[in-house]
Every structure is written in C-alpha cells, then in structure tokens.
Length: 192
Image (cartoon, rainbow, N blue to C red; front, side, top):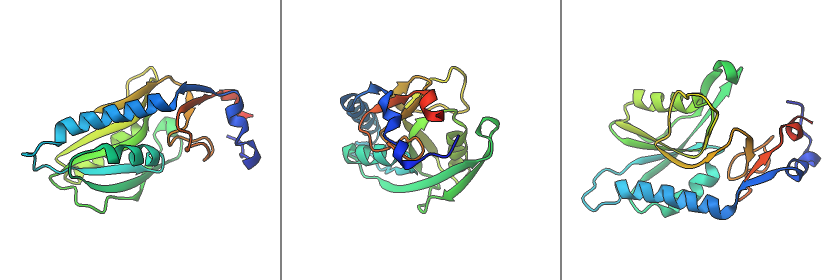
C-alpha cells in the first residue's frame, strides 16, 4: 500500500460503515467472559490459567475482558509479526515471548482477529511445543473469509464479514484502534 499521511486518517472513516456498535461489542466481550468464567471460576478449581494478550491489536479487547474474569489468573503478553508475503506464509517472528512458564499449564491466548489464521496457528503450536498442556484461542473477531483456516478459535466474540475492519484494537495504517465499535473501510479508501 502507498505511504499514508497523517492528515488522511480522518478520511478513512468518511465512507466507512459501522457494522457493530459499542453496545454490540461490549455484549460480545461480556459473553466471552461468561464462557471463560463458566470453565475456570469454581472453588474446587486449582487450575489458574496463564492469559496471554497478543500485542498490539488485542490491547483494547484484553483491557476490557480481563476485569470481567472472576477467577485467579496470571497475565502476560506476546508480540509476533509476520514478514514477507502474507498470502504465501511469511515467516512468523516472535518479538516478545512469554516471560511466564507455560509448561503444564492451560494458556488462554487473546487476540483481536482471526483472519487467515496462519499466525495464530503458529502461536498455538509454539506454545504447545514449549510445554503448554492446553491452548485456548479466544478471538474477538473471526473473519468469514470463505475458506478453511489452519486453526479455529475456541471462543469467538463476533463473526465479521470479509471486509477491512477498524476499531476495538484493529487499525488501518496504525490509526483507529481506539474506536469503540467496528467500522468497515471501503477498499478504494484504503488504496487512494
């Protein structure tokens, strides 16, 4: 994509369509918290999971979900990036690995979106290779891309259409992660 100028950040939303408003987003997060609480919030449960937020896209989702979880947990984060041609499986590079011990533990990975799925598939396998007993993928958005993915999420907040979406942690050119809802950006506005 072409270089993006700061003064065009607002233009991205001029023709955008809000596909999920703030209330829908908050309802989805609360439901996800409920699913996790149903599994882990029991007095007899001695299994305190490690929760890993995937930075930076999952920062908003993670920050909203964590206070709604009612069981003891340990929190850490990871940062992974893909380099090269993403359509052809660019290399996944770990910029930050978990500082916490994952061996023998249930690990809950929080991410903003499951798109093609290559990166999250890699993350899940790497955590299992590091000794995690179980890896639970909780993604706020699952994009309906119309083809099979190498990994499926265990807990999904919202299924979104195969469009370019910003808000609630997802960005365009680094902007609009801070929107409280989800907005679909027109392709022509991304490339102009």
